[in-house]
Length: 207
Length: 207
DNA sequence: CTCGATATGAGACTGCGTTTCAATACGAGT
DNA sequence: ACTCGTATTGAAACGCAGTCTCATATCGAG
Image (cartoon, rainbow over all chains, first blue to last red; front, side):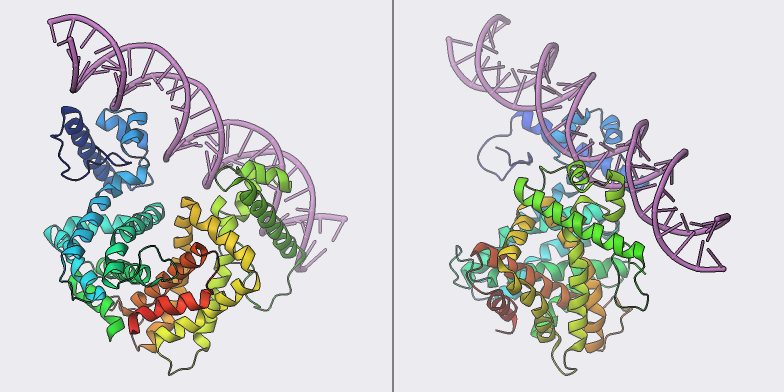
């Protein structure tokens, strides 16, 4: 059971067959090699053929695992989105959506604190490479789709009603704050904790 | 005097030379032809060569006018951004930034009301075409850069301080609300006025 | 009219992403 | 262990976006 891009999806029963384990191994290997090359030579100056050569895969197979070159860098975000959504659903029922979103983002904060140096490098590359920034926004859109239903539920809004943009607006705005905090964090070289910047950004509304 | 993509910029002195007028007419011609082809066959199924052929231009020249295929559709946004920024600066000094941003967006609302049918078609294409959505976000980033200084000024924040993500967060969140409102507007086929949706979206915070 | 700057077309080139096809590796059932 | 249907793989050609070079016009100022 895999999603459209082949990520193994959830703990849904199946004992992972040999094939799927192979698949996972290959994927992490590719990501490792690619990240090394990207940080060494820059994203734009690294060709897909080069990555394929260094991993011993063919170009075609590479594109079967990752639909695009950018996806090699961004596959991880898919999972982060799921984690945030899970965390959001776990927040107390009576917590305000805005606050609940802020708390759900703590999973990302913790991930960054686990490896600040790597996170800094990663985010810098993301922000310096236009094509990556663009794809990154697309991924955030998928986060949005994962988070909106829960916010809608908390606001007692019929999920099918598109005349009420409030759930979407809250989620999109929160994600915008998250991006802004990340940008600031990179700008001051990690000098100010991400959590603090995120509090400031999202606190600009309740003032 | 032209900006990086060749758009004539503001009423800054110069009487437009013949060359620049030619340039302008060619550009609007290309945009017209391209929009027709895109709505007829879809963005992805229209090649740049086709547009070049129908306008009598060479591929190379086309790319001199518009850096990318997406830019042909999105050049107009550059100007919209400037208008919003101008409107924002014109808002009363004591108005809250959030409200001032809401009012500044009215220029877009008015543009949509001037040609709802065309706006609907345009936005639909934008949202249905992934590569266009991605570039659209990039353009919004440039809007952000145009709006942040004024918001920072109103919050008495030193523009150079990136430890304070609040101006950026407010602007990014407002733009997210704008996008969400536009999405809802398209979803209900323009059934609810954009202004109303925008009020709802941006009102979800002050509640 | 002349000269420098600029826009143009033609064509080759790089790189991403897709498609086709034949060969191979898995894995379930016998 | 054998076999057959199903996935996965590499090789190679293809389509298209975007860049570059270079020779040729075209404009604009003096």
